[in-house]
Amino acid sequence: MIDRQRHLDEVVAKLRQFPVVALLGSRQVGKTTLARQLAEKWSGPTQRFDLEDPDDQARLGDPSFVLRPLTGLVVLDEIQIRPDLFPLLRVLADRAETPARFLILGSAAPEQLRNTAESLAGRVTFHELDGLGLDELALDQLDKRWVRGGYPRAFLAEDIDASRAWREAFIRTYLERDLPQLGIHLPP
Image 1 (cartoon, rainbow, N blue to C red):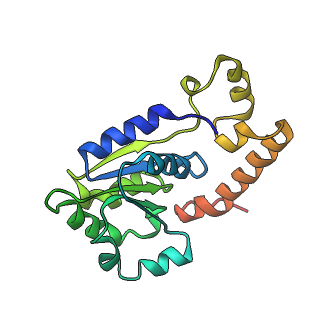
Image 2 (cartoon, helix red, strand yellow):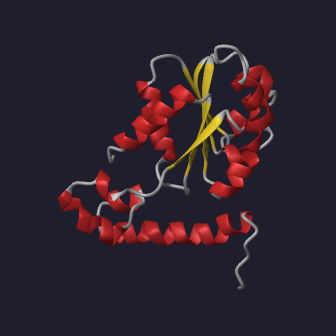
């Protein structure tokens, strides 16, 4: 695992100032890993919901009933799946003494998610997580970064062939799944 302390520190600082922090970035860039690291260091209760997990979807059948009593850090991963939660998050963010902080993770197009979250204006701040930056790596890792790219799994792969296989699978999934979800259809 690559230490992404700078991003961790920035997200913690934003959570101190805002009741809702949106951690945005493409799939597989490390948002969930960063959220787990943050939850481990959080001094207080934490609760995590993966909105792609059917069990978590079922738990949030009545989101107000489930989210309203929570305190501490509440992580909502893949928030773009449930845009209906944004009005409720606005209400929860406006409670006296803000008993919970919400870290929402999204891999939709950042502009699309920002527009969806507009009901949270003044309550939310955004943190963009990109691929591994040169400032996050040791000098002897820079050539490897240029060859394998900045996605953590490609960078940390066992060898160059495994890295290439991961990148090819990621690109294929992006072209076949993610672009059509954004309304972009490529010719056959």
